[in-house]
Amino acid sequence: MDTEKILGLFKEITSAVLIEIGVVFAVATFIVLASQRVLPWLAGHLHGKQRLFALALIPTIRVLVFIVAFVWVVPLVIEPSMQNMVAILGAAGLAIGFALKDYISSMAAGMVAVYELPYRPGDWIEVEGTYGEVKHIGMRAVEMVTPDDTVVFIPHLKLWTKLIFNANNGGPSLMCVADFYLHPEHDANVVKHLLEDVGLTSPYVQLSKPIVVVAKEEPWGTHYRLKAYPIDPRQQFQFMTDLTARGKNCLRALPVKFAQLSPEHAAQAGPY
Image (cartoon, rainbow, N blue to C red; front, side, top):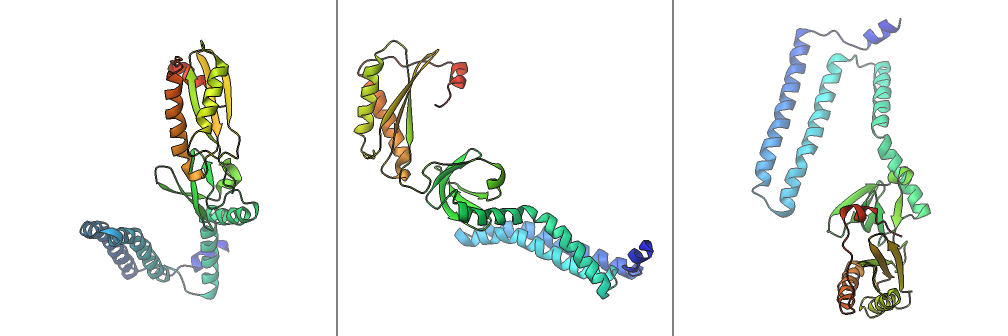
């Protein structure tokens, strides 16, 4: 009985139908291949947004051609009755739902993000090793710009499974850290006070926030971390560069010796 129902979905396939299906697929293949050759050539003669628009048409044309070919071929092989259409649409809906499950999950995570606020525009976040400033929060993904001015789109789906590090959490304060590695033979108190003065005299420093120097003794020497806050989170890289450059100059004037880390020791030196 089930076999009869399945066979009842299909029309009788004649040679004329097979030829028509072959022609449809041949024309569709020709259009897709032609677009993949013509549009890049056309884009090479255009500039700016027109060039990008021409390149963006390639996948769009491919999808449109596939849809038209599918709509053309289906009535040739499927009996267009109400029962058959319901069965086909149900199967298609199930397949589309399965294909879009990650997209739907990302949209659900986006609604959770609106409530929980794990990130906001202007926040500096890190997700799976990618660090940057949040520029826009869409329904499916968050748009982030890295320090190298690269735009990265991160699906909200990452909320479910990945750690999200937020450096300033919606506020104007973002801690920056400058690292210094010194030979163990030196006066630690002198170095500590010197690095505090380096942080205090930076033109980028936010004086209302604490300036902290943390020292840790390692087998290869002493690791100092100068922690302070810039006035604006967007100044963090200029701030860290300023602290590092002036800190090294001041340490040379003491004088102290800088530690020479082997690759093995460098791998063992972790943040604290």
